[in-house]
Amino acid sequence: MSEPLWKRVWRTLQKEGLGSLWLKSLDALGYRRLYLLRRPLVEPIGDCPMTLPVEIGWLTFEELQDYFAFRPDASRHDVTQQLLQGDRCLVARHEDRIVGAMWGSSTRASTTPLLGRDLALAAGEAYQFDAYTLPEVRGMGIAATLSVAWLRHLRDEACSAAIRMTFLWNVAALRSHAKAGYRVVAVVRCFRLGSRRYVFPRGRFMA
Ligand SMILES: CC(C)(COP(=O)(O)OP(=O)(O)OC[C@H]1O[C@@H](n2cnc3c(N)ncnc32)[C@H](O)[C@@H]1OP(=O)(O)O)[C@@H](O)C(=O)NCCC(=O)NCCS
Image 1 (cartoon, rainbow, N blue to C red):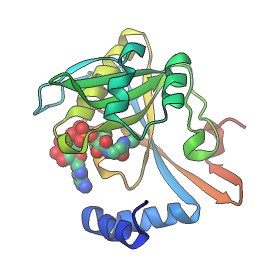
Image 2: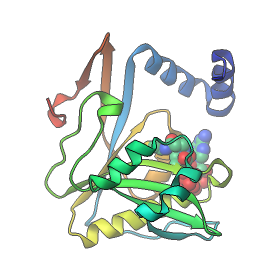
Image 3: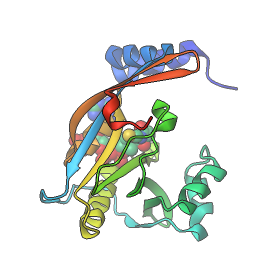
């Protein structure tokens, strides 16, 4: 059974503060705001400090069982489709267990689940999405290290920039991405009216 609303409100208020509760409430009412972050790859890519030893590697089809043990909430169909469509996922392993993961694509920015339409990638851009670290090892630099590994890989593939989208309330994600050199380049607003969604600024989104 899902957690009662008052418990979720109280938890958000205690852990994340009033600002976050306000932004999440607006989101639930149909007004969503996200930052578009960009990381040019001509800038140097330094290491990020990490306090847990991990091994970084690509997720393969053979390791999908490990991935679903790490993210039991993930849809097996969606994750398999992502790999089949050429999306890639870097995973961080500690003592042979996946503790962190980060997805990316150099061909598409599937923002439809967030905003109702996909973002158009500019030439040379790659899209990063779905960063996740196990709750018990958060704040140890795992997501920032995965970002850095991704950025170096994209630079070697001659990409010019990495972009990603993050909710305004997601302080931990914003902090982690900032450590890897991402900067906010736009605030994207999405209004939901019935089944329709309107996104601003429209320029970067597909019709
Ligand atoms: C966002 C997420 C991936 C970050 O993973 P992580 O491995 O803990 O990230 P890092 O350790 O690299 O960085 C987190 C930073 O945020 C800080 N932080 C965490 N919670 C915070 C909070 N409530 N307020 C302020 N800073 C916070 C940490 O201290 C750390 O910064 P520091 O290194 O300067 O101390 C992880 O929190 C997560 O899985 N969240 C749920 C899924 C999610 O929101 N994904 C993001 C999609 S964009």
